[in-house]
Every structure is written in C-alpha cells, then in structure tokens.
Image: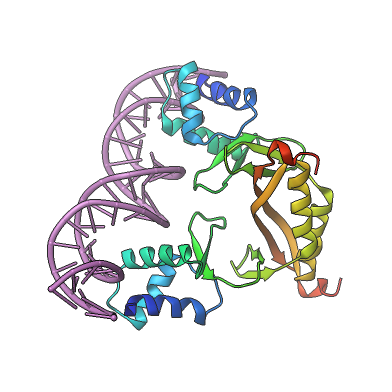
Length: 126
Length: 126
DNA sequence: TTATGTGCAAATACTTTGCCTTTAC
DNA sequence: GTAAAGGCAAAGTATTTGCACATAA
C-alpha cells in the first residue's frame, strides 16, 4: 500500500462528486506531487476491479469515478452545469427486471441516466 | 448527394442492427470500394445532425448508429452475443419524468440500457 | 463553373502498456 | 532482498480535421 494509492482513495472519498481520471490526477497532485497520470489510471482500474470504486461513462466520452456504495443508485445530470444528482427508485428497478423477463432475459446490469435542466424559480412547487 | 452517402444510408436501412463506424465502413466497402473511413465518420455525423440517424454509445466506448425512427425506444443488450433488442415502456418513461420533476428538473433526455443474458430453455415460461 | 464532398494523412483525446527504476514490507 | 508499484514515454483506439483534388448540380 503506497502513498499514491492512499491519496487517490482519499481524493474520492472526501468529495462526493464524479471526477474523471484527469480531475483525480489534478486533485492528487496537490496532495502528493510525486504521482504520474499513468499511476492514476492504473490505480483507478485496480480499485474498480476491487469494487472500491465505480466507473461510469456519462455522455462526454470519459470515464468518471465515484466511491462504491452499498446502495445502488442512478444519476441525473444537469446539462447546464454538469452537476450530478444521485437517486434511487424501486419502481423503476422493478420495471427493468420485469421488462427484461418479458423479453426472455435475466437482467445482469443496467444503465439509467436522466439529463435535465433545473426549473426556474417561477416554476417551483409545480 | 454523392454515391458514398447513398450507400451509407442504404447500409443502415437494410440491416436493422446498430453498427459502429468501422462496421459501416466495412459494409460500405463491399458496395462501393471507393470510400474512406473519414467520409464514413463525416457522413454519419452529418446524418445524425439531420436526424436521419441516431447515435448511441453503449458499453464498449464506440459510437453506434441506427436509422432514426418516429417512435422512441430503449435497448436491451445481450451480454453474451451483443445482440440488441429494442423496447418501449410508457410506465418507465413516465417515472423518469416524475423523478426528474421531484428533483427539480425538466427532463431533456435520458439513456436507458438493460444488459441481460437469455433464459435457458428450462427457464422459459417463468 | 463552383460550391460541396472526398481521400489521405496527420492531429486529437483518452487510456493502456513496456520497460526500467523505486519502494514497501 | 524481493515482489509489487510507480514514472516516463511510447503505443493503442476511436474520432476529427487540414488540405489538395475530385465531382455533383
């Protein structure tokens, strides 16, 4: 267990966002200037395989990471700011399983992302 | 309107699958050997902007294309064969809108992919 | 004719890998 | 001491782009 790995994990557990490899690299650089982008990539990969991190690929063509959590959730991405909100809805989960079954499949995974723009103030409480 | 563009469109309307740029290129090469991969990329891009094609990015990191259709649908991907099944479910569509609203957002887009493995024969009719 | 499209090769962006050095234990 | 991890630079993969030539209308 090296300092590089410790710092990478810390960078992801402290902030609850979804940085890509470059963002992790920048963040980690400030804490430990002795680290290379290759190490970041290798470590993120390693931690994903160990289920310590989860890897997502939202629109934009980069992999983004977050700390793995016990509870499954999906994501809503604010298309104006890039801000990400996590949510979970049992009804949707159930429907996905049901649909897969109807089509003759065991559901082994899914990807659900909502893309939205925030309500304006005047539209609140609707 | 050039021969290259005609052939690309034909390659996608004849087969109802979801090929990536390279697959389209190979397919088109057989019909019109005078075409470059760059033209394929440019044309796919062009047709997507014109809403003639739809672009998807399933797991695997490549863009894949299908003919645009009037009716929206999502995809179930067979993780063993890569085969893709299209489906549509109003209940899921409605829930997505509802969830976005609850979180304070207008839903402007979404991505829903199910990944599954086919039932074995013995498991049919369950 | 002439604006538009194409082919080729080079450039880009992100990620992975080979190889040699460094380090944790 | 030794196996594992890291740094650097090069390679890999998918896609985009600059530019000179070709072609549809």
